[in-house]
Image (cartoon, rainbow, N blue to C red):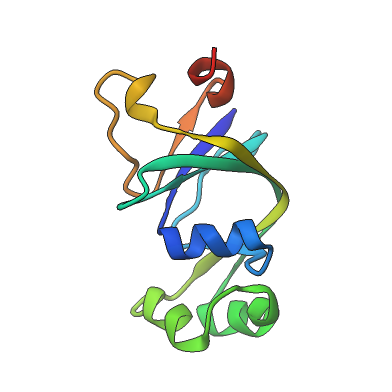
Length: 133
């Protein structure tokens, strides 16, 4: 099982550069059998730019998450706490091996009626096999 995550281009580029080692979420996928997380870089890019393997998934209060991962967050403190404003818990997905796509994938060309996920959705296939064949 795989997951497609919507990530703003500024944060997707930090993942590609290796300066962002955690992806933060207010809610997390329930399935534990996730192989790969595909990154959909949202507007204005609107392409799937690569994928990563999942390391640890941390769950904690935002203040404690920040103390644990701030040096590898790829965010400044104000960005982080703005994202988690009003939330009593959050999640940090450790980005394992990141594999950028040489040619980012336009999902509208290989999925009928593609709608970017609000947060994420599950995929029972590998995107690059479907979209680059």
